[in-house]
Image 1: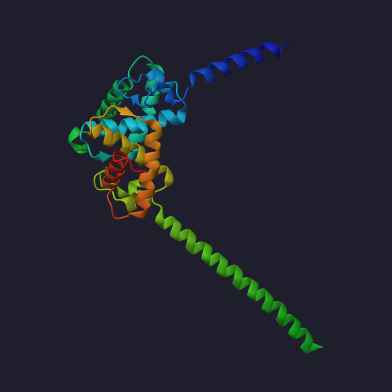
Image 2: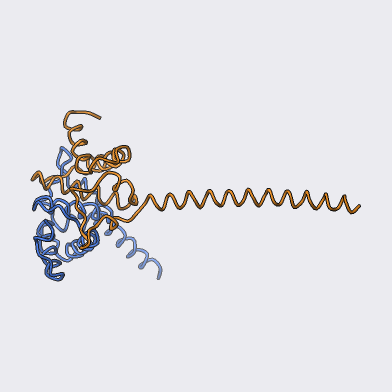
Length: 119
Length: 132
């Protein structure tokens, strides 16, 4: 009986975690497209780690492409990927593009990077 | 008796010598193969400039293909995002993107002199024209 309660709690916790993590395609429209401007931090944080990593790297490229930057600093991109996922876990209501923007600006500020360097 | 022993010993040493030679040749071949493989695969930062930046417009297929699989995959995803951002497209089709990255990497292995952005362009055009 003593074991029954922790076991039950663990099962509930497990079910809760399993429910929290969904595949990226859950957020796709009927054509299989995912609107990256609408995706929220809750959705990013709620997907599997591998999918979240994939998406944040994609966002990093997208953000740079939008801004017409053609340079990539791999270490910084990976650090940013990590920061955005951590930020998103703490701010589920924020959109991912906003989380990207906040973290990119923060990292630039910390490193004293000027935008011109990245063009 | 002496001769027989000497011959016998000679056969044993001869066999051992042949075995040693075989082991040595195998070891040398393995070493060469491993050296060649490690030469072929380099970290992405090898292509970075003095400030640590990688110019994604200048990167060649040979460079993409010669980096570690994990780095090539990372770069493939980043390029996909970059390409879409560049064209002001705000959506991603995850399955199609993963397929595209795989195809670009395969294409790059066969076309080392092409720039990666041109390989991506070739793939996008192929998809748009309905090619497989």
